[in-house]
Image: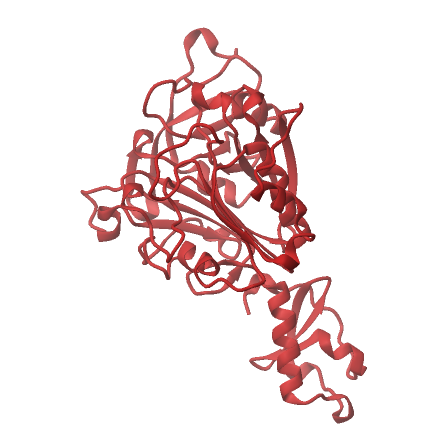
Length: 407
């Protein structure tokens, strides 16, 4: 059982009523007591149960598995363990690297809710491998059951050209009746509809991922945000039994979009284990820059933003307000021995400039003039352990224009 799935452990009586046994599971000589949707563990030797209250081994195992599946987090780590959330940084292709995966552009580093204190960990898997974290996480897409809701959206769908009529937004939603996941990412032409793989077109540049495990009620809030973003949904489906349970996700599948102001929405979304994320979603008619005009003043912090720095219409660092937005210029992933310019990065993330703010945001839209009139967004978390992992990546930022410096 994954560490993050264990809740607080309270005092356990030496005898249990028959109607209490469904809350008890034994695994590896440890008794797990479920309360408030979480699991707590104590050694079996500390919980002497009288013979008169023991159930058959088969019944206990069945009830245990059912309860654990109902609370399991669908974001999966490299060891096939459930985690509450994770972030991934697909590293850019660096041909001078001694690491073969980095040299091919398929290496990634990750942080999960379990190992956040360790900072970035370089994976030994290729991101093209079905045993990689996104590969394991997205397996329900390729082994569909009849009780699943799924949405794949990308303004650059697999085997198709870019579509400007929809939001600049990319992600995956997976849901069953007990909950599911929301994966926000930056990769064009990904993921495929049949069998996991990573596109060769995504190997050259850096890319970003955020996976959040959500209970059913919180997962449906993602549907609200999608109605603002107007995503290009290229693959979706919903089990008949889930239509009424996920009305907002179903509305998104049916291409429902907001019809009146306000053209933006900030939605707190709580993960299965209680971490609060803040989803910022804007519609095309918002007609402003996401970070400078909304996220930075909303979070009351200056933000350092990493987004696409190639092509026409990219915005310079914006510094003429209390809360500035500065573009990242150069980065270094020390655990991978990689140093690169922002022009080699297609990821979309932001971090507060100072430690006492502790904000990290991972999204799917760039700081470009053309994207002020397109839907998109970012998802932010206030986490004092995650913040330094992102902040320390930044080696330099684009200087503020002299006339716009906030003095």
